[in-house]
Length: 171
Image (cartoon, rainbow, N blue to C red):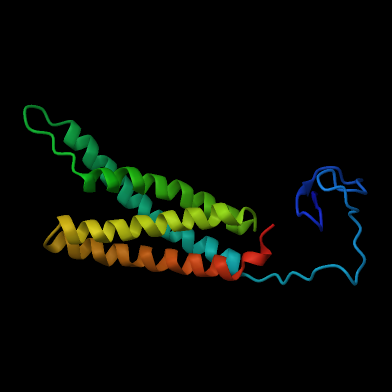
């Protein structure tokens, strides 16, 4: 079991410590001075919706990576690596990795900035995918992409809102 300093919030590994090794203040806080932090389920809900949005970004990231590999595998023809394919592949996998990390930290109510960064990266990826559909793609495929990308944007926006509302619960 780890202790947290009531003054600076840092994790203290020594369970028998009387003073915080980081800020030097006493670890025992009188009951009338203790801050009451309300614990809600919003960080957990944020983690769930971030994982759902990051999973959609992983799907598109893997499809984009497959497109990159297929484009590079062409022999005897012009290789056409457009910005859209690179964005879809590279940033999809990156958004998934940071989104999943942010969701894990949201579950543990730790590292608010990293949780928000991961969620924001998934949101940025969804908006970028929507822009690339409007710029580069036409037809039935673009309708499919929009139908799948809109939930990713909505879920990541919901994650941003849940994280922002529950900011005080993070250590």
